[in-house]
Image (cartoon, rainbow, N blue to C red; front, top):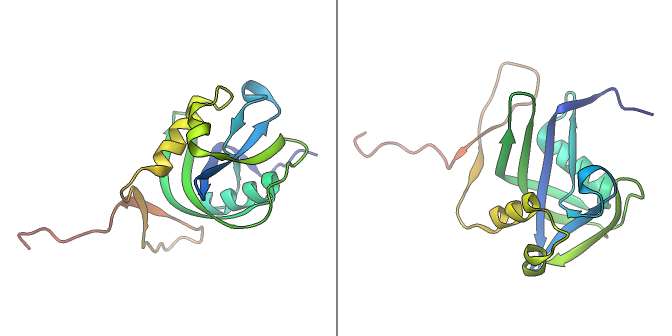
Length: 162
C-alpha cells in the first residue's frame, strides 16, 4: 500500500560510525541495486528531517540513531537531500527484507576503498569523519505551529568591535 503522506521532494540520510565502522545497507532496487549505501529515505508531511532519519534507520536497519550535525546538503529546483552525522543509540543491524538485503558494520577504511560503495556514500562518510563543527542546530523559535530547525556555522558570536 502506497503511503500518501510521503513528501517525495524531501529526503534524508545519516552516517553512523561506531568503533571505526560505518553502518551500511545493501540496496535492492534502482540505480543503487547491489550497492552498500548509507540508509535514508523520504520525509513524511509534517515530519522533521531529524524524525525522518530516526524512522528510516529504525525501519530499514533495526538500529535506533540520534541525528546530530548536518554534514551535507544536496538540492536542485525540485528536491533536497540532507545528510546528518548520527550517533548509534541501540539495536542490532538487520535487513528490512525489502529495500535492502543486508545491513552490516563495515570498517571505515574498507568502505572508502570498496567498489560496491557508491561515490556519494564515500563522500558523506568522509564528511562525517571531518573535524570541525560543521553546521550545528541553532536555537530558534517560530510563531508557526510546524517544527522548524535552523542550522548554521557555529553559534552567533559578537564582533570584536562590539
